[in-house]
Picture 1 (cartoon, rainbow, N blue to C red):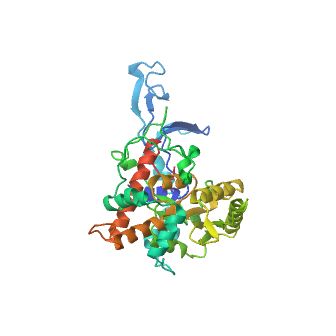
Picture 2: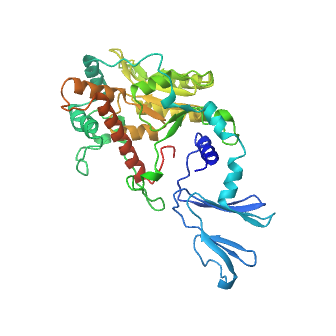
Picture 3: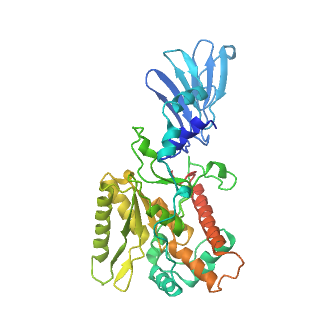
Length: 411
């Protein structure tokens, strides 16, 4: 792709997700009239240009009767392409000519080089993550609801094989709402699948059009091309290691800072303790955004005998919707430092309820602990196990997205 056009798309991807479709959209301002197709080409759009200066575009050919001798040109819109007629100049503007003109109007490449924050280029963090000791890990696992089955049958296979473990179809356990046992909050939610007009996508064969990339920070104003719009952290995928999270936490460019919010409540058995904690977190989140912080990091590690963690799904959804009500959600990214996320469904729920990225610190610490205590009998290093686990989660997320016909994480 031409570097100028690539810079245009890269700049705008910071605040506008790709339009997956299916959609064929026509538009006009009275001077030009045109149409565009979604980037995956999931809708038909066929056009013909006649010798008597008519342009006919529809989802099928033959919508209007036109004698074959009058057809000067015919074709179909390609994925992501535009077809534009300038009625003042009386000519058809090609997609290449149109985008060349638009993409060269501003110095997008210069803006990206100056303001875009790339995670892989960040310096070492000011404070390194302190790995949890074996006794701490066991205490945290009990607090967040880990079971031996979760570790042996879910986390361990993902770390060893780099993919989700295979299980039988169907579920023979009671629905969470009907169970008398404590449940993970995500168990009350189920995955949906595409129906009617939105076709599912094959996450293996159509991987080319799928992406886990996202941006953590201010989404900017869609109607104003401000260079600072791209001043956010570009993430290639949503699962962060402990080191990457500390790198983001240490960013201080003067225009970009992250704020850590503690997600806990007093475990004193009194009514309203959890509600008071959520109200406090929402209030602190609004204060942080109004103070200019561009990323909120929701952390649940500050727990002890008197304080219990707020479920990360509850915390992120409460803050996400509170910021929407205040009109502030687009000004900040939300990263979840979660102890209670270890399987793909947990991560999918967090993303669907507003998280930009997740750091599963306890799952990663548990993998390290299983390796050191000999529960994982493998020659793979801890770093390889960690990479395998993150790959398994990412592939699982793509599979969840594909069922709904969603191509990109930003969508």
